[in-house]
Image (cartoon, rainbow over all chains, first blue to last red; front, top):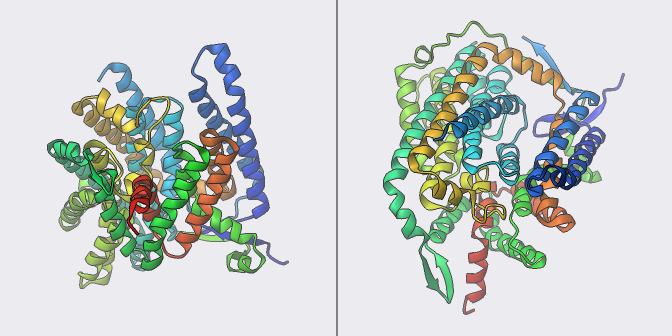
Length: 80
Length: 457
């Protein structure tokens, strides 16, 4: 069976397609959370600027968690 | 320090430590790309700058302790600063000394950070008056030039001359400065975040875009999974005093003190390579030299990150070296929410004892958490991280954070500004220009372009 083709980035083997999907998921969640922050700020009475960044970062982390579940790890660890 | 600040310092330091243990162990996590965006996010989110500084100090302690663990166990660096340790680790592993270098590296990190904190906090206290003099401006060619600019310019030229490609590095300084000021004039405001992030992720973006080019793609192509060989290790004592020999402790202490001050203007990775190589070559026994170099490099990694941040932050007030202009860059840029730079906010709102106490507490809590975890469970954590965290998800996370912050900075043009700067920065980095040159050019750009425009030529 022919081995799959990956690309090396910073010493890691990556799939460009999976990187694109992971980036898209994290970005969509980050921007979605970033844009709903002003509404939440209005409801709670906190500063929208800081909340936008906080929620955006949380959104990106949610995207990371989802991506981690749907992306295959491309390392084979052998214990010697 | 009031009790709430104390609790927040402890909580944020603990959180930062746990996060950066994992980031440090993961291969391919560049320090600037992972430390700066998170610190910037916290600052923009409205977290008190002193708390963010405590977070940052804990992240240095944990990251620099953890990034050499995959080097010792698998010969793979966990970050850019761990790359110089790879040849030493390979020699040590040939002799079956993987667990020796693992424990020595972790212990040396503690020594490096503690010595650097003691030296830079004491030194900064006594040379603080020099900061006022450096911030004074003189008129040169009709341009108001702060005296620290000459320090930055001298550092820039030295860094350029120590880059792999000296000529390209030298000519890139005025060229990149013009690009930066040009973008700022297009935006109509002195933006910083998107330009800074552009340099931060430049190498990654340039490599990724190169993979999309049919001819360049071949160089990156790999078949099959990445094979990682993880060596077995024995039981390691938790007592750090038993781990380092007198010789290793003396060298780690001496070079941590020296390099923490030199990192004010010099490159941390450059100092790690220079001192480690000198020690390795100076030893008659190849194995002993490699173990000594590996150990002292670990101490220097922490020391240069601490010193390179604190001396510019506490004394000068502007970034004067690759560390303060790079990973610690967010502390030196004016934030609209604060009306000043986080650095100025810290210095104006907290006395020196409180700042020092916060930094020492952050370091203490970080080592209290990271040291026993890494000594006892480094192999299990490395196995779990290597087997469960896909590189794509992590890179996707950082790219998403960069896109969001660029958008926050200058909306859609900010994203494209980041892309332009990342492409140019990535290309210059590929040509052999150190990222430190690019970060420091970003700091020097306004004055440099004003002086260039005022030249009577």
